Image 1 (tube, rainbow, N blue to C red):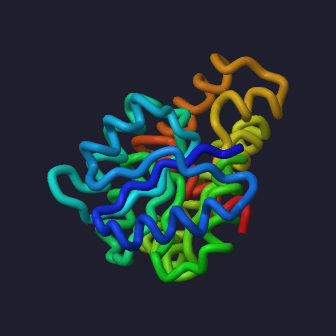
Image 2 (cartoon, rainbow, N blue to C red):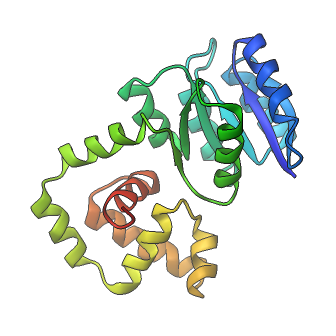
Length: 213
């Protein structure tokens, strides 16, 4: 059973989504939050597997809540579900630690499928969101530099990058490659330096674009 926490300041939407998701046999809505601060408090108490997070909320918005929760509980996966497809919200949410970004217009069965994918460790970007992310990556790094980046990685690091691009955690990568988590962390540090990125989300987006597609 996948335990869900819904964070949205629109009660009617939140309650309707909870009712639809509760129809799925493997999904259990364990809590609902009206704003980011409540989402943080409920996360600490309920320890859900997945959080569906709106972006624009009072007191503490979804980006701030995502960053706070991801820092405290990095194993809890966050899926942004919002009406806003602004570039700023998308990149701030992903950099804060969200593993997925969908619009509220997404049909409930597709939201449920995205939740399951996230629970398995895969990132999820809506069909209108992914092109924005990949376009930004294209604009920020010339093709020649991308080729040079690939040449700097050994085979093991490329394997790690591919798994990272699939949304795998360090533990899952270590298991898949039969290595220790400490070894994976060391490789990650080297990968971040060579890509000149600050965190695993940025590295995962790069890998998803240039190694998986």
